[in-house]
Image (tube, rainbow, N blue to C red):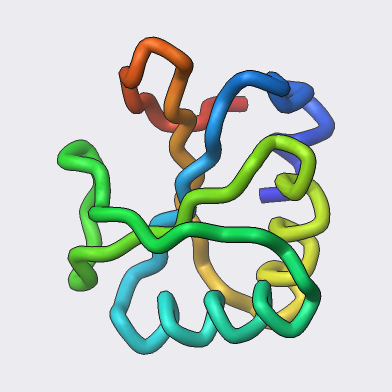
Amino acid sequence: MSDLIEIIPPSPQAKYIFVLPTTHHTLLAEEILQSLNVHYLPVPKPHKAVSDCGMAIQIEACDLAHACEALKSENLSVRVFVKKDTGEIQPFKG
């Protein structure tokens, strides 16, 4: 996940959506981000995402690298999507 950030620098206008495989993992990720004072917003899972959880976590571009490193250090599997300023949501590719 952090390799993607090195390849594609975050767009300051975009929002980033983290999709985790289960509700338990999503709640754990929220706890981790909250403990690090990373601002996040619970949002519905993007239609393009495959997950057992219907929720996802949206973060701002300024918190992307910090959030990815924190979740990676906890061995959480995360798919990252980009919500562009047009409202379109796409997988974050690298």
